Amino acid sequence: MVRRLGAVRWLPAVGGWIVMAVLGGSSGGVAFAAAQEADFRSFDQDDVINYSQEAIGNQVGDYEFIDRDGERVRLSEFFGAPLIISMVYTSCPSECPAHTQHLDDAVQKARDAVGDGSFQVVTIGFDSQVDTPERMRSFANRHRVRTDGWDFLSAEDQETIDALAADIGFVYFSSPRGFDHTVKSTVLDGDGRVYRHIYGEVVSTPQLVTPLRELVWGAPRSDQGFMEHLSNRIKLFCTVYDPKADRYYFDYSLFAGIFIGAVIISGTIAFLIREMFRRRRSGSGDI
Image (cartoon, rainbow, N blue to C red):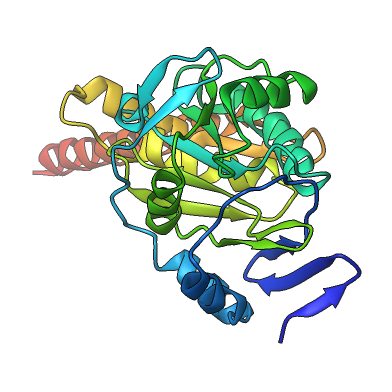
């Protein structure tokens, strides 16, 4: 069963926690229809996890949003590279801001690890009546998210939010003090399919970088040449995480080991060949 700790529901999950917070501050936000809300309200932790995990592999729809500058954008414009989707509501007093700030820190380190332009991030306001472009811009500024390749988007109608939430397995419903919702980020692959979920308020560097490394370096592309593919495979296997520094670095020791091993093997082969010819010459002289 769900354990309540004050104003927060903590749901044990594999590798971390799902936080479903009883959040306040939303003024007139619209969530799911009553029947859908009843379904989600009856979920226990296994239901929430299963519902979310079953979304892995889903193709996310090409929905239209409005960015914080008032320009219309389609979600497909962000496809082509991995995309991280975070859903928040701007009236959220704690969990959404905290998750965004932790995500920002992890994104900065992920860009250092896999490259500045290798992935994109969108934060989407799921309270469509309140989360206007102005509110999303204010939310981004208030939490000092000014990273290139990170957009803050609003929806004109709740149906768009509901459809996207269903695609990515995002659970939310209205509550007396705002919304209950899963706190997570969802990683899409370059084709817009759900690849991984990162649960909880805190986003650790390995949680974010691991799926991005797999997608950026591990998945071959049709337009990728042999040398680029080889380079990416080397990066995938030779980039390691330093927990003390909380960063990834390229480990040259593997190449040193390969070089030393190659020298030893080459020397051994040369010695055997030389001995073989020496024995043959010695044998010829005896005759």
